[in-house]
Length: 127
Image (tube, rainbow, N blue to C red; front, top):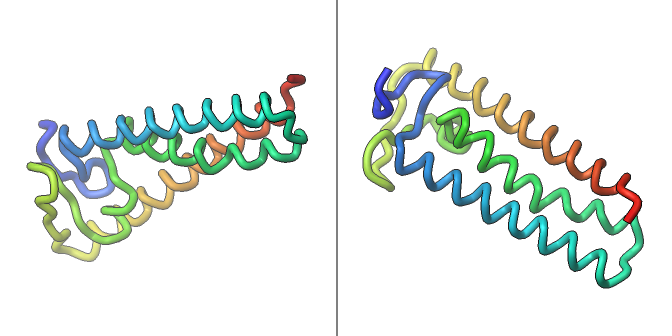
């Protein structure tokens, strides 16, 4: 399979879109670190660390999408982009759209689970 070929339920973004998801993952990770450092230096109560879930979720979504070569928003919308940025195409058949929705749901679940686990680890750490 080439990097520029749509495959229902498996690959709905090309190299440019994958790079965009990698940037989202890095930005989410940077915001997560900044949030954690801010919470720790401000002496916030341990329960405030639950707030780190949101930036960790952003990082997780970007990471899982880039590794999967699949955009969950495109999967739910019935679209794909294997070419230049912003050049969306519609998924033509209902079987492919259903496969894309299943994959998008799995990516959302994996991302939320990863962010939740990381959040719980951060809450449990003794600093």
